[in-house]
Length: 313
Image (cartoon, rainbow, N blue to C red; front, side):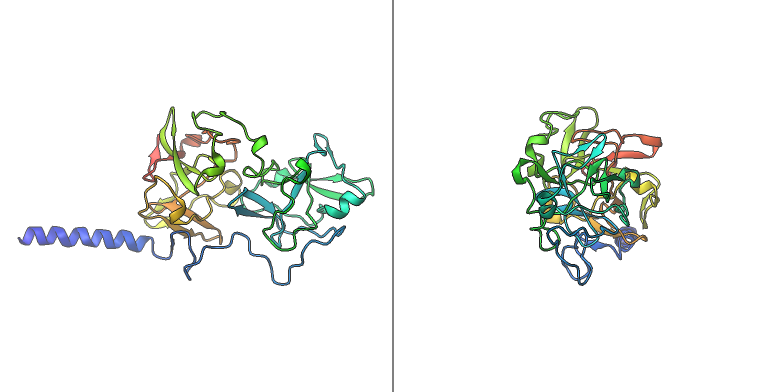
């Protein structure tokens, strides 16, 4: 009886210690007041877009739109757009005159890369009036005059040629079904039904088995140099340009994954990151479409994640 009680106490203590290790994390993708965190809160006094007004973008941010997926925004949270009639190679804007009144250009001056986004994607193009316009992966960036508040995307799909920009300069993944690959990637279901995926779910990869994917169907990874108990990250600074964090996800917006230790990690750099079993989660910039697993085994330290949060080797 004494031995059983001692073992029981030891087991209980271990559970308490594991729970304490996650202390300070925010449960279920919510903040300390129980509300879902805003991805890119607009600064106080932020002004809506005005027709023909070219406002500095400042530090770019990423808005994780439920409908569009990751969307690039300016520092005030206003959606940035790209125009199909422009070109990226070489960069050239074909929106002038009345077009530029409805779609104000984003000046290149003063624009900074969003956290976790490759600054090398940012550039500029000289316009016909001599001004310089911000480009992302070669594509000129615009706002839409009818977006009157942060996190609006009223310009999405206008005329079949205007689309919200993703952080890599491509079209936002969830608003442009026509531009999505169909049946591509390594998984049988890759590229299909991505718009219907929850915040985190799983898919069966032919080589790796059951792995976790994000809301865009992109493979989720773990870094072996991180730790869960205590929760720490070894991926900071330039590392985040290649391995962007998985933003907080509500527990109810998941399917097929372990809910234990499903907490938001408040990183030392101020970024909030989703975890499974207290392990920080990332995606890989080298994965360009759903089904890609190009980050698997990189450096012997990065691996896809199982539904239980374990490394898939």
